[in-house]
Amino acid sequence: MKVLLLSISDRIGGAAIGAYRLHRALRKARIDSQMLVLYKATADPTVHRLAAQLGFVARARRRLAEKRHAQRLRGNPRAPHSDHWSLNLFDYPIAEVINRFAADIVHLHWVGDNFLPLSQLPLVNAPLVCTLRDNWFFTGGCHYPGDCARFRASCGDCPQLLAGGADDLSAKVFRHKQRAFAAANMAVVALGDWIASRARESALLGAARIEVIGNAIDGDIFKPLDRAQARHALNLPQDKRLLLFGALGGTSDKRKGFAHLQAALARLDDEAGIELVVFGARQPEALEPSLPLHQVGWLRDELSLSLLYSACDVFALPSLQDTSPKTVMEALACGTPCVAFAGSGAADMIRPPGNGYLARLADSDDLRAGILWALSKDWDRAALHKEIIAHYSETSIARQHIQLYQSLL
Image 1 (tube, rainbow, N blue to C red):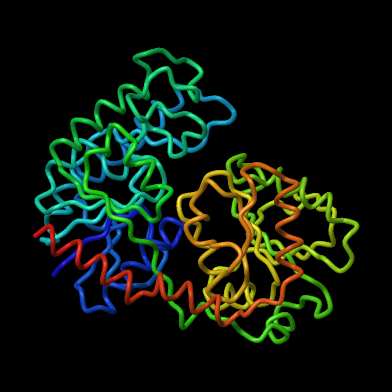
Image 2: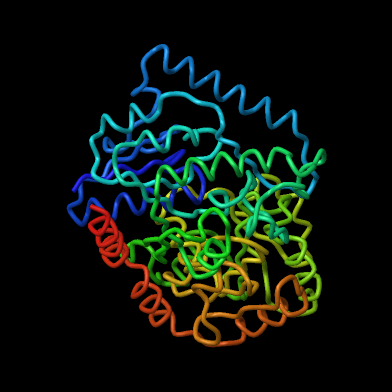
C-alpha cells in the first residue's frame, strides 16, 4: 500500500511533527509512506518539497495564489483575540503533483495557508483522509473558534472578523468547504475525543466518517531517564522541585492560557523549593515569573526533550484549547505527571489521579492546587510511561491507520 501524507512541513510546529511521526510509524510498519510538504526541515528522502515537484509556471501560480491569500486576509482585519486563519481559496495545480505519486490513499494533515486549495480536493484521484490537527476543517477559516459555536450550523457574523455580517469572509469559506467536501468524500481522523465531539457537532463534518486515532510516539526515545543525570546534563538544580512549562509561542497567545499559569505561579511564591523551567520561549523577559526561572530555550532534537521531561517533576499545560498536545504525551512517556485544564485535548491523555490533574477550565486557583498536588506525590514513572505507550505506541497507531486505509480501498 502506498500512502501520501500532506503537511505544510515535516518538523516545523507541533502539527508537522505529529504528521512526520505518523509517517515514520507507517514506514516502520512496511507501508510505502511518502510526504509532500511546503517547508522541508529533515533530510529524509521520503519527504518531498513541493517546489521541487512543480514546473516553472505552476510555481509562479502557487506564489501568486499565496500572495492573493495574504492580501485577502489583510483586507479582512480580525479582532485582537483572533487566532490563525487560513482561507485556501486561491487555486494552483497541486492536485497534479499529488496524483503523480499514484498513492492508494492521500492523507491530509495541516494544509492551511493555501497549501492545499479547497478547489483541488475533488481533483485528487485517491481516497482522502484528513487528520484534525486543529478545528480548521470544520470552520469558516479560523483554526480555533474559542467560545464561538457557529460551526455547528453555518459560519457568518464571525466574532473574529471586525467587518462581519451574515455573508462575511467566514460564510464564503464555509460554503467553499461545503462544496469541496461534498465532492471529495473524506474520512476523518480525530486525535482524541475532544476534537471528535466538536467535529461530530459541526455542519461540515457531522455526517462524515470520524475515527479517533491519536498521535504516535516512539517509546524508545521518550522514556524515563535518570533524573539526577538529566538535571546534571541540563545544568538544573538537584535539590529543587522543578515545574516545567513549554512556552512554544504561548506567552502571547491567549488560547495557550499563559496568563492563567502566571496567576497560579504568583500564588506559589511562598512554597519553598519550587522552581520554574521554561523551554521554547522566544522572549524570556515576557515571562515575569514569581519563581526562580531556568530558561533552556529551544530543544530541537527528541533526545534533549526526553532529558528535559525526565529532569522535571511536573509538566504544566495551561492551554484553554488544544487538539492533542504532543507535549503532554511526551512528558507522560518520560514518566512526568501533567497538570492541565479540563475541556480540551489534554483531557484525552490525562486521567486523574493516575497520571496528573485536570483543573477547572480557566481557574487559576485550581491550576495552582493541581500543581501543588502533583508535586507532592511520589509518582511511579515507569507506570506512567507504560500506560501512555500502551495507547499511543508507533505500532498501535500505525496499525489503526492501516486498518482505516484498507477499509477505504
